[in-house]
Length: 345
Image (cartoon, rainbow, N blue to C red):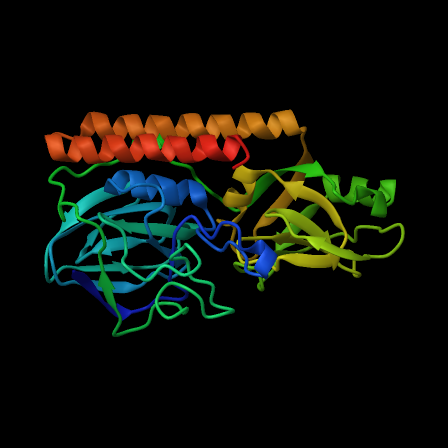
């Protein structure tokens, strides 16, 4: 069922879900939502299971005209959303009617927002995922960002509209700002750096470069001193890995990263802060802070608890039985998705 047509695709709007699993061995990155926290929240607000496909909006969102009744939810960055002439806000769900238009005035806080439709966006599965990997033209809408003239179709045998709109308490909604304290675990190749280089990395402020994208966040700042050069025998590229190139500058590997690389990695950003870093915009300040593996796991448990609070708010506020049932299922599934991450799956 087609529910919206694209009047303007925005700066870089793609279909994403939670990404491809088990394809790194074939040279295919996982892709998926850059900020999984916001993606999971958007799907929970919409009443979807966590793996439903959503739109990932980057800095300048699209302009969509709805052609059928639908329930939508928006989470993540505040990109100045408007429904017709009224501010729409973020971290909320709503029902929309044919003829209404959703548009975005521009970024106010953060870089990426997630727009979910009840039922999920219906595009073909490619290697088990609907996520778009533009560098290879895989997934999504023909492997590319949205463009004017596209039609958005909704999947799933579910009600198209849930009558009760939800707004999450602002106290539970993250503010991204322009200064980012990013937690890291040193390694796997910290021995390739001098003690002075590691100290520089952990004590300096870096700026997000203009080339920061879904593949990697290139940062600029004080030079990180290497002990024996930047090159290593190529090995796997983890999400959040901090490569240091020959010029001593760090690059944080993101969702569309290469599956292997030959630069030494001084550290790895903890999971929840990798997601948060995706909300940084060029010019933002980034500082790295070393933590232990136990502290990183605690951060993920805290994130799971936050998702449960969002889920509770969603189900407690839903007034009709159908809405409550869908959102209860969605909230439980989102919490289960985080539990799988904690279990290493």
